[in-house]
Length: 195
Image (cartoon, rainbow, N blue to C red; front, top):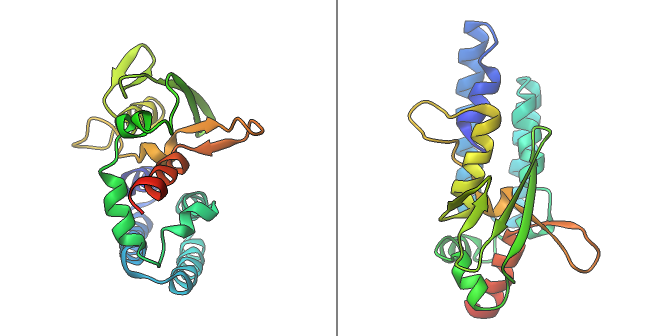
């Protein structure tokens, strides 16, 4: 969830409402960020419920939807509690090249995403780069940010919206064609190689 994207979605509202909503958005973002680092599963579920209620009460509907999307899979909850913060730190250091080298990703691999109704397609290359709209990018996150920029523009001071490419991009599971986040493959690599 990018705070800048939430702020942008609120930009059309009147000044007093906007200030209150932006303060609440910043507070809720801070709560979720802290919760993801320190909370147990039970605490996390309770906090998310509370944040969803607060967001809905303040009419932060886009924020409310982003929370639901961000926590939509069981894999997301696996990171909460049970050493989730340490696992997240290790996951941040893993690259596509690591996954390709371990055989978790079979390159070239087609990936896709839909953002605000716009469909994007890209390819993970054998060298670990992401080919998107004729350009090669060093990471999933950069290519995802460039894709989002084409829809919502870039926040002030940024080249593109900060985006977690591991969550943004999805691949088709060979077992049934179901779309799954690339992060699932990173977790698979972590389970095998990092423990």
